Image 1 (cartoon, rainbow, N blue to C red):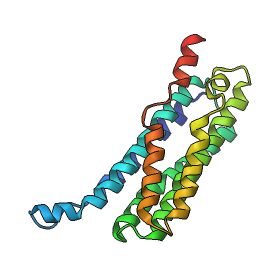
Image 2 (tube, one colour):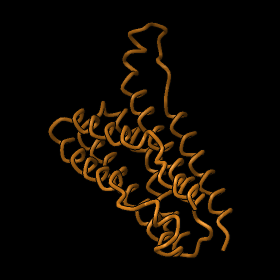
Image 3 (cartoon, rainbow, N blue to C red):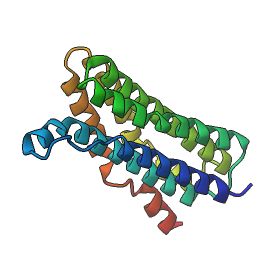
Image 4 (cartoon, helix red, strand yellow):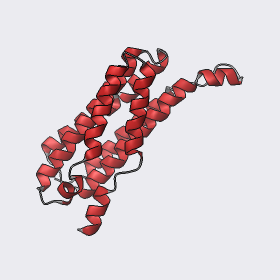
Length: 192
C-alpha cells in the first residue's frame, strides 16, 4: 500500500503536539525581568521538547522518503511512535509544574527512550519490508547514533534521581547528537 496517508497523518499529529506544547508555555504574570527569568526553566523544557519533535519529524521524513510502500505492521509501528511522541507535552508540562523534580524528569527520559525504541521498530520494519539490499537497509548500516541515544536516555533516567539537571544535560546531549539531520538516507538515495 502507498505511504502518502501515513505521512500526512504523522505530519498532522506532530503539528498538534507542537501546538499543545506552545499552548502550555505561559507568559510571566508580571512585566518585569525577574518574572521572565523565573519562566526560563519552562522555556528550556519547551525548546528541548520542540527540538526533539523536530528531530523525529526530520528523521521520519527521511525514512519515508526512502520507503516505497508500507504495510499493516508499519502502520501500527508508526502509531506506536506517535503515541510516545504525544506524551512529550505532558511530561514537559509536568517537569515545568514541579520545578524539574526527579520523577517528572525521569519520566521525560522514559518517554524519550520509548520514542527511540518505537522509531527503531518502525525503521527496522520498513527495512524488512524493502529488503536487505534496499536503500533503507544500506542507509541505516550500523546506526551508531541510534545505539548511543537510548543509552544516554537510560543514564538520564537513573541520574534524575540523583540530580535532575544531570539528566537534563544528558537529554540535551541526545538532542545535540541528532540536531544535525542524519544524511545517511539522502546520500544513499543520491547514489542509488
